[in-house]
Length: 429
Image (cartoon, rainbow, N blue to C red; front, side, top):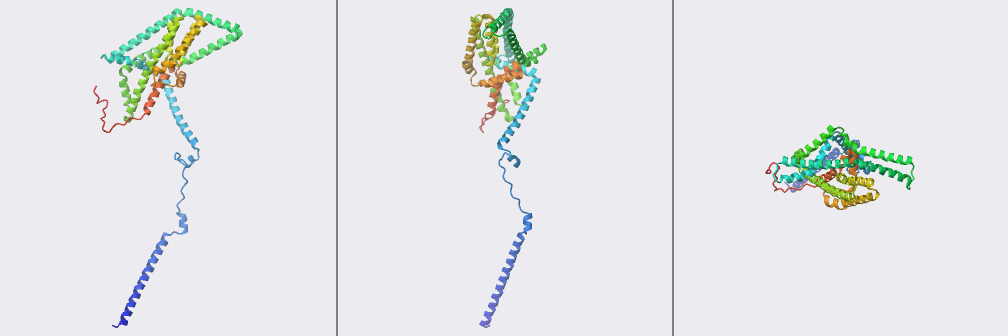
């Protein structure tokens, strides 16, 4: 084979190879074009399956829809507070109605709690001498009943003995006031004086009925009075003897995670109630002693009964001692005249200032310190809801709730991982 034939064969092979390459590239381009055509959708398909634009974001995360976002934030907050307050108010109203229905049971139990807080230290002191719990509690109750009965007997006997004389002097004092109103600087007529006396009498009668209506509504019969007294005695006895067991039983009714907090809050509240009652008794005794000594020195009748009235009135803070002191001033005015009455008034004011600025802060302490405005509001609410009994238990109830809520709001201390937890059942007797 010549050289020309070899060159011609090689050129033909090159042309075949180039044709194959062009055919391959043409096929590859057609495949790419077909793929692009399949991926593209016609204009009507793009419109039909077009993704909708996203909605504008809601302005506040607290709203659940765009409609809520149109309401002002302050109005939404006010509405949220309003319906929650309505729910709490309805529950409180239902609770008060329920307590009103069973008030014949609630009132003796409340009094028994106060007496238990007062007498608990005496029972604990007797049990230190290895006395049985039942005997120690019974002995303290008997001594307390004897002290109360003896005091009431002495007060009633003095009132019965001196009531006729005091009534005559009171009548003379009223006539003197009428004459002074007519001939004094007021120059009132007989009709005006009579009208003023009638108005004052109606006001006293209406307020007296409002104060005692709730307290006497549950004691309209002698049977109810005796039932309440027996319930107070039995409840006080069992509170003093088995109070700790009763509280543990109540705590165990709640979930396990809440028992520690409730137990701690209950112990703190009971300590506050005991401190409050004992401090109130001490302050009332000091008030009664100071005013009683002033009445004895000034030779005012019914010195001991008036001192006992001051002692009982001091259990209603701020208001009670002032009212009982006013009664002592009126008795001095009727029996001894204006000068002695003014001196008694000065003694009452001095004792009140001593109580408010020295005794209350020193004896009550920070554990049961309550603002005077809260005390006044609590007493007024107690009078409206439950009469005299409400005024008596309003302030200790506020003190207990204050301590309990503060303890419940406090964070529970963390237990170390290597600590050994001992339950009440595992503790030695």
